Length: 263
Image 1 (cartoon, rainbow, N blue to C red):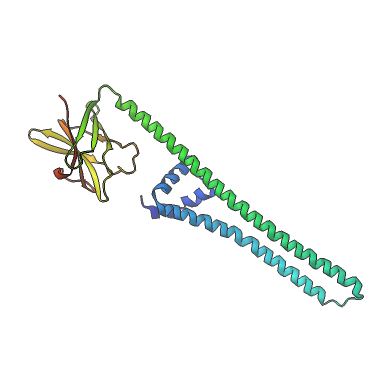
Image 2: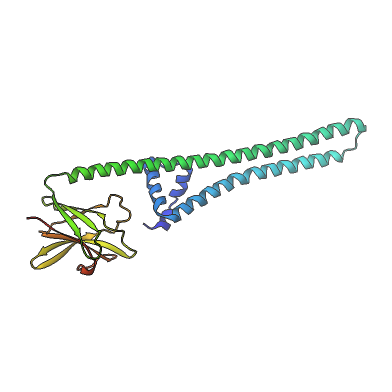
């Protein structure tokens, strides 16, 4: 994903405003989980909204305060007929204006806190809804995979550890009729940066490897079960660690698992 283009699209602003659909919110949540740049952008938008909401009220209070001062100064320029009649109303007016300003300031602070809490609550609710949707999707995916793997027509091929990592293990569930293989690699360690696992279909005599594909989403896939096409007449399967993008032939020194198809 081009995260810069994604941020520039404006979808994160709609996410913060609460204007997206439930499906769109889930998609944005997944992006936030994967890209720190997107999280920073959401925080920037929230801060900008808070600053924008804060900017308006102080201007209004300042304007009101200026008007009150002008009125007070204007009253001071009026020559009173009698001192007793003019001073007391002026003092009362000043006190009322000051009380009004203090009241507006207190109310403004309360509104600021309420607005901030409201934004926080909306974000927490959106994140919670996103988590629930993702859990439900993962559960549905797991159930579908379990149903497929229990198919009695699948050929199960356990892949045993090789010298490079004696603790590694994997399995292939091969559907010959549909020319599809389900690769379970939960027993493989996380590949280092710049490396990917590559799955091979093997003919044994003579040894002829054919690449079935690379597992370039290993880190993102929680189930660690990958679906690959396999139209080959496989006699064995192997998994090697290769540079990103894969290799034309397997690096045998990085052979992690190997298993023979039972005839």
